[in-house]
Image 1: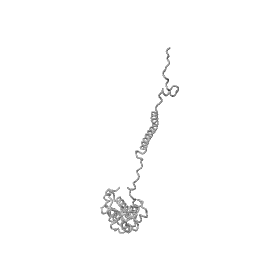
Image 2: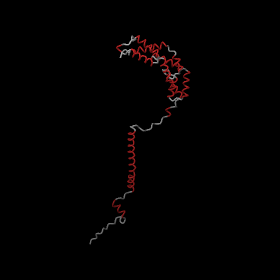
Image 3: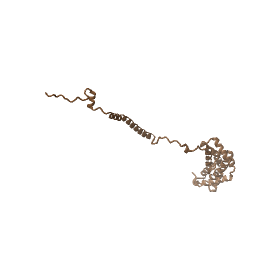
Image 4: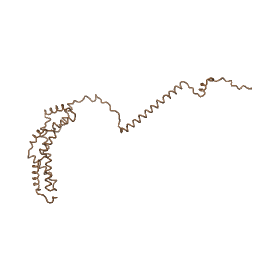
Length: 252
């Protein structure tokens, strides 16, 4: 009978089951290939973590923009101390404030002191500068009071009482204000009252004399005129305008 036995030499892995399985499944690989594969597998978690971090930052940025209505939360750059230069001298700053306030307009000492206080100038420094400005004539409450009266008495027709109230609000001492008010000529004060009444009468042509008298006297009282002068001036100006008698057509 023919001999069917396979006379080929046995495979090298015969007797070692593990080597046989590796050879059959081709799981065995060279060291270089294993290293590359392990490196690739090991880098995947790091890449995935980096991608998740990038997506998280993008979402955080969008959330911050929505919460802050598009405003950037980046801190401002630090100030360049060299470019900013040395700090300003407090006395020089206070002096400039005073000069700016006095440019083109006289002011009382109280007004200037209030301005320095609003600018956080120390009280001691403010008083020292104001004293110096008074010495050189840049601050003078007496001159201020006279200038104020000269502008308000003929222009606005204000009487002494109204002018005194305004000077008090400006911080002028009552004694200084009284001396300046005493310089007002009583005739000038009366003339200012008459000018006010004549101007107002133009708008009272359609009212009766009683109503006109009441409104004119009230106007003069608001301007600081006393009752005696106010009634006297109103009666005389109504008579001068031919309105000394009530008009029956205008009565209620």
